[in-house]
Length: 113
Image (cartoon, rainbow, N blue to C red; front, side, top):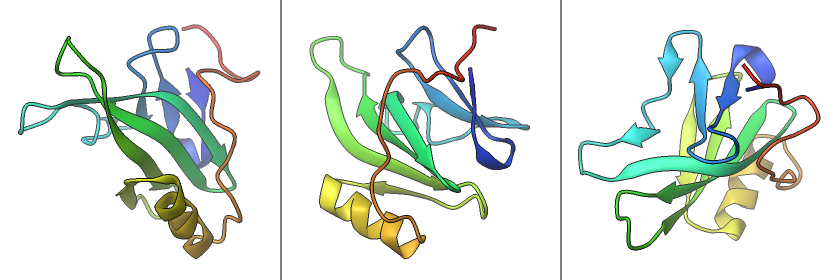
């Protein structure tokens, strides 16, 4: 578990099946979706109030499908899915964040629960 800005936390199973939570539970963008996809993040990072993770669809055991960058503004609770790096950087700049943060499976502040 890693604490994020504004009361959000990032949880994973030792670096895989990562998801973002707020006090009420896991955000709806993660887990099994109505369309049958299974969305998770394995790499994440944050800068100021913006959290970014690389979102994948893991519903098929044959292949992992990259969905792009999930971006969360922890100040407002609004979220976006940017299909590529340039779209993600554009959205972050609109949020006042100059560049994509470094993404990793864990950080120095990550702790086991």
